[in-house]
Image (tube, rainbow, N blue to C red; front, top):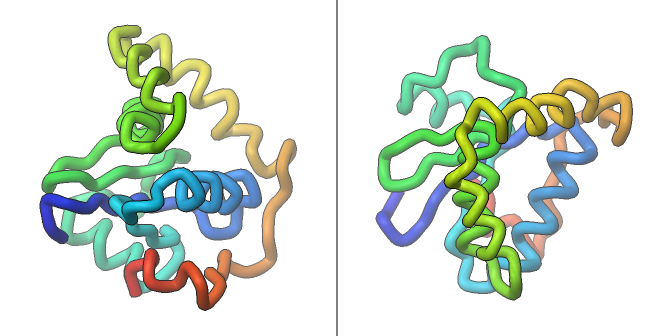
Length: 134
């Protein structure tokens, strides 16, 4: 992974998480972010490489410049690289993580109930496949 890109690990069977990936892709025209579902070989390989245990948190995981970020910190670091007004959300980084993650965890715990779950892992279209780590 080069310094000019980051990898987002996500729950590939979660509808909310897969929708978030598409949201990010549409707002990241320069292709800074690459993606891997946690349930894929590539996702498992990246987790092993960065010491992310199999008891991974219910969280989006961002690997950027050889550092790993979880939960709201990952989400805010992603937002700051998107186009339009999304970088403004990065200002919330000054809020202590315990407070930010409290709200993040509510969504994470309820994501299947609120947004549903797929039977199989998210499969990217040919158009966006190059953005995924294989």
